[in-house]
Length: 380
Ligand code: CAA
Image (cartoon, rainbow, N blue to C red; front, side, top):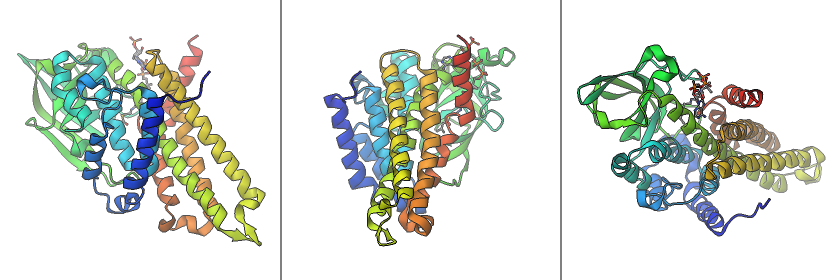
């Protein structure tokens, strides 16, 4: 077993760490305060190839592996969690299924500009009554000659307000349940496609999340993504990759909080010595550092399996479950180490805690991760 990064992995880690330190850390608190989508930052991500990290160069991507993607996600999210999720959705939930299931035509038309960051995309799975129970879709797609007609609604769609295209899951044969769902590439400028509500969130406030409505949205027949009625598998295998991205986001957020707590513990004195000389604080730091590393190893394992083309549903769920719950614990401890100052916005650890919370919810709640893991354990 070799825990050393390759030259390419070290390089992307270094590049994204420097980028985050220079471009994201100084503005992250303001982005959180203003809740404004960071358009210029997203353009810079595009220049660095960070909107299609694991997409081959021939399709406009950076042509790197999924460990590189996880490393980049950790660093970007350490700098700004909102930027992290914007990047993660475009990479994992949009580029990845287009790469895996798209036809050559679809790749040329959609994957290339998405991976280059010329446009952004979103993932339309969640509905008002289909969150954890993703198979109970109400959105329908009906064939009409050479077109599909989509009707329905989606909600909590990250990147939705800024996206030019959405991967939409819809019932093509409702009576067949999860065997009657198909995936579609739906351009946002199609008549009948509307952003109906933009959410005001607790954290990751500079990323957009919205509801979408589809009213007689006509798209060409060739916009079916993957095989007819096999859309549920497209959604699930896409989320296997997405959960690596969100686990890495959680890790980056937790590391930001840990690093601030570590520094504060040197600077702050009580009872005549730096607070990290008190065992109560030193042991908290020890637990935080251990948990960060444990999460990182789970993420690297899942990403390595994805790179090898091995099924990694359970490993991705383990990585996301552990990293997201770890981030909550680590951010909470970082506030505790800061004492009363931790509750004050200026010290920023409260932001990390708010940003971390969503990682236990989106791309499958912790309960869904436990379901995936336990089903996988029990099926053998
Ligand atoms: N890869 C490929 N196929 C898979 C799969 C996977 N990882 N997981 C399941 N499948 C297949 C199964 O093999 C099965 O096929 P057969 O019926 O042919 O045997 C079929 O899919 C149904 O599987 P299940 O019986 O396990 O389905 P289920 O209805 O019990 O649901 C679930 C499983 C795990 C609960 C699933 O519904 C789930 O993951 N729910 C959470 C949804 C989620 O994560 N939503 C996040 C939305 S996206 C988001 O948050 C983005 C954002 O904005 C940031």
